[in-house]
Length: 368
Ligand SMILES: Nc1ncnc2c1ncn2[C@@H]1O[C@H](COP(=O)(O)OP(=O)(O)O)[C@@H](O)[C@H]1O
Ligand SMILES: [Mg+2]
Image (cartoon, rainbow, N blue to C red; front, side):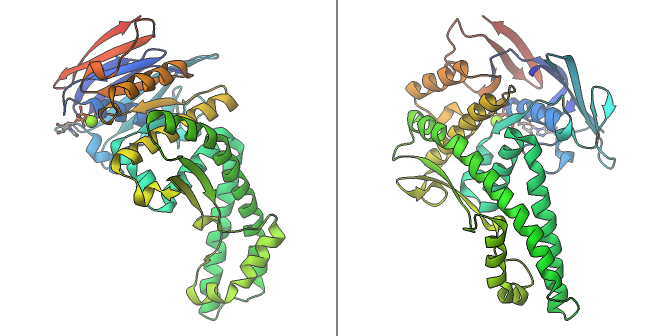
């Protein structure tokens, strides 16, 4: 799946522009505040129906406009595809895939996978475990689309069990009913833990290698830290039963994969707590690159990688190395920079250049 172009109407700084992506690396350059991140965000919005920067879609509508619309054109073996997302404050978002309205763009089969590095996404490394769990669950879905069902089944069973705990605590539900939910929960939990473990195992060698090459010293590692040690549903049920009294006290389930950790570390200490900002950025970058490799080796569809302002914290040798990694890897990359010299593209690397010249204007040039 190749993204061919993105068209923006009244999106942030842009009134009406179309940007064309090259098959390999597309470099978006321009001074600070020019609208580079806005353009990446529009690509993400057009491919997923959501912003990668805000949960408030109103922010996306160009100041003074009443609605925004982003259209992404892509291509695969079956031919051209078109995804469109339109949003006007106060109205439901309108999304279409190949002209047909869809509830969720994420389920559309003709949608490219997208992976995004934003300086704000450091939360993934720094923030609460829930963010890393959700990230790994998305990775599972990207690697093995059918397994996303395990995550949903677990979430549903957990909500039901928690509701029952609350009822029992208030004297309404029966303790025997809980064992039915324990079994549902255990089956989903064991599946979910296996999926997460498999996904982390698929990326961990690549992560270590890429992080190390990009300059994250001290034996960088990513590992899965499940709460439960259960290898099968029966063992998980036993773990739940042992904790039933405290669950009843609290009115929620305190044990299970919804409390898991994904540990990203160097010198044996978590980057989350002990990493510098620069180390956290390298960790995030290496993780996304390792995921891209894992996804493209398992499925024929590497994600579109959006890298915002990733060069500013790398020295020149590592910038060259990153461009080599990106150029050698599968799939498309869009990378923003204030300084074109920071993205040293060899003449033989296929790439496009998009210069943002200010006030929502762009200028395109295709190199090689
Ligand atoms: N809804 C909007 N309408 C118009 N301009 C916006 C909107 N949202 C943000 N901006 C402007 O976008 C600019 C920042 O663009 P951005 O893409 O983040 O810049 P950079 O090139 O540094 O990544 C700011 O000047 C900001 O005022
Ligand atoms: Mg920016």
